[in-house]
Length: 176
Image (tube, rainbow, N blue to C red):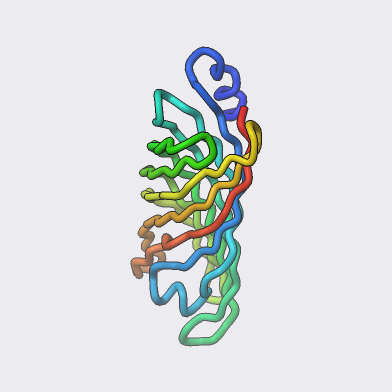
């Protein structure tokens, strides 16, 4: 729905739309989180639209699924995190090929954890900061090297945990 809306107003309000698929390496910021689940791969997608010169809005979603062992009982536990984030990005246009950027945004982390102790399904507000560089391969296709940091505090079972962390990776995209 959102993609259709952005594409429908593209010609009148938005200067450029980029659609990309992402592959990220996620390092949780919380030590307990790292001990139980460790770092891992996260996939996702993003749509970005130009508002005014050098300023874009973006909407992204990511998906992480991990299994681990509980610290005390050593029992199996599983985790799913789906961040959905919206933000604004400033592009530094050095030339026609390389466009570094910085961005800030916020959104929601949907979180699901299941183990013998119980099941927790929660969501909470999150913020994100990102930087990277888009490298155009031609007029239609590009590679985006990126570095992101997110923070989302949840409180399952009375213990506060930050589900965010450092994400670094690459995305491949197309320009409309």
